[in-house]
Length: 137
Image 1 (cartoon, one colour):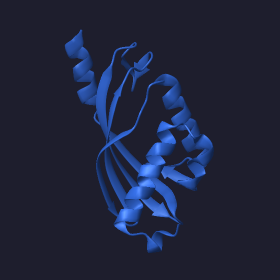
Image 2 (image 1 turned 90 degrees about the vertical axis):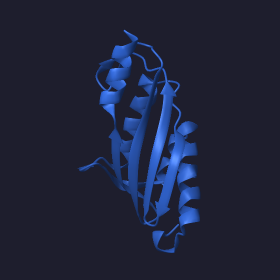
Image 3 (image 1 turned 135 degrees about the horizontal axis):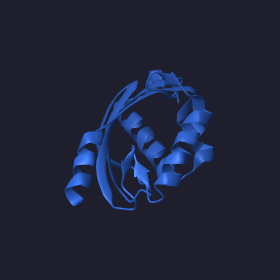
């Protein structure tokens, strides 16, 4: 799918397909959505690094599911707010969660190149997670 011919509706559908791929752990299909030379923040991690990052996330958070709360698509860019309600093992973002249920959100921005996500910027409010964990103690 060429990003030059994407409409906002088609881009939103493409993104929902990507989220479905993540939620089903269909790592072999990840290359249908993520560019081989993808950058995460300022770092080029490539498709294999991106997949490894997701696999580590799932290993640390076995019940991880990506839920879209807000989705804006303006080709070639997607902006989404993702919600998480999960039970990480051990630590989450360096915080001692130790099997407690945690709810948090992520604001993430993607840019397409050659019909796949080539740039990903992610912002997670780690201070809010720390405050929620501290309030439970």
